[in-house]
Length: 325
Ligand code: PBG
Image 1 (cartoon, protein in one colour):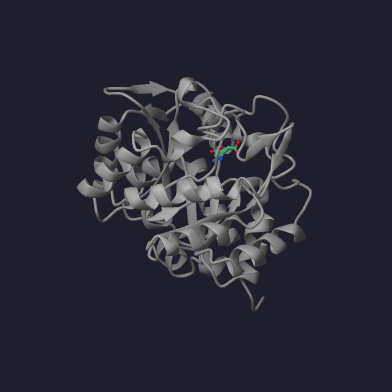
Image 2 (cartoon, helix red, strand yellow; image 1 turned 90 degrees about the horizontal axis):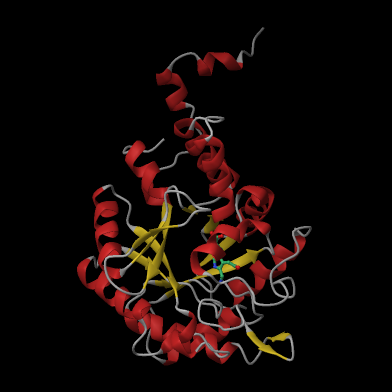
């Protein structure tokens, strides 16, 4: 035998040299749920290990992550029902606790990368990402709402905005609004290929943001489609996106790979709440070993082509693997 692939696997030193994919905390973004009030750290039953945090706890959490070399965060607000309305006006209200908390975070930790969520659902009494009119999610009238939300978030100091709403034309519309308001440096992490997935369940529990009626299939993508992701990627790129995201991640590794091959922009993948919950449940049952299954899972998302991974395991990864893998 001339070729013996096992020669490159025979010692840790040789395996180290032959390793094709690396992963460290710098590739990760940690999603955090923000609650209004003080001294709140409430668990989410369907997402063990993750908490809704009030701003004081959020600051502490970010500080402890920064000490682990984890510098990137995406924050989602849990908004009280009485602040929700059909046009999501609380999204850009000067009283908005999410915007206030962002200001505080960037003041205390200017070196972190703080990413927002742009969509109506946390603030909408209909629980949809867009404006609902006669039972329909209307596209073009949603855009000015998203733009107002975006400018308010940029003003609050978010480094990147994450439009997760899947309305047509929103990246370009938001980009123009940001530029007109002078926020030329605020980036856009576009949810490019966001699928109408069953994997968002624990997230919607965390924020109590499930749609009040219907589903999200008229705006989020059909899980059966691959080429459609390329159309979305083309549009988001032309409209000025700085990074493209695929969501969920594990169930859509082929789509991550496809976008990586077709785009020169950094590709992000969102390892969503349901995907994390499945693994956690199996580990908590003693069926899988978290210390091995978790890094293998994240590595598979990187190997598929993700430059950036949003995952609820980010902090644990940074704790368990300070030098990366
Ligand atoms: C909503 C939004 C969702 C997630 C991120 N932004 C849920 C949805 O579309 O219903 C899901 C993330 C996760 O499940 O971890 N704009």
